[in-house]
Image (cartoon, rainbow, N blue to C red; front, top):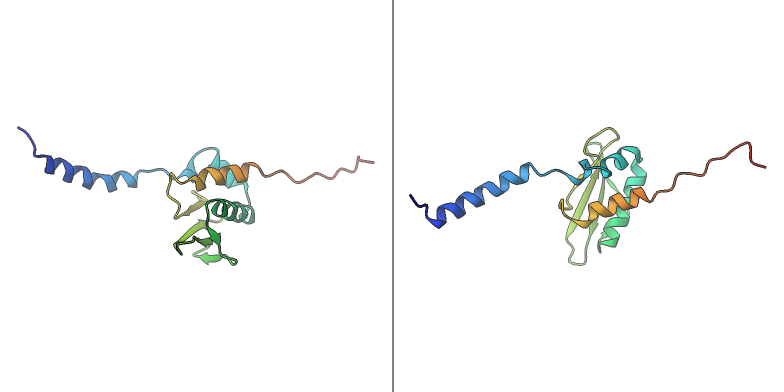
Length: 127
């Protein structure tokens, strides 16, 4: 028995949103997950703003707050807005928000957090 093409298309279209429910946030993937767990909120804010700026967005001067999460919002030339939510330490995923999972924002965030240099240690042994 053959199924009409329209039935196959309807079935495929109805399953696509269900697949999106099982997509995994880039903030849960290694090494970004570990970098976010180690970073303090201001460091993540700075990294998120840097990545949004690199992608052509203009971050707002003041961050918001939403149910315990720090919100970094930005707009682009078309006045479209995007928001990144930085959850408190211990939350997983630590960062959520508008950038699509395949957006370069996520790899940039990992790069920005990975490029952080540890603070110089002060030693009493130095002359």
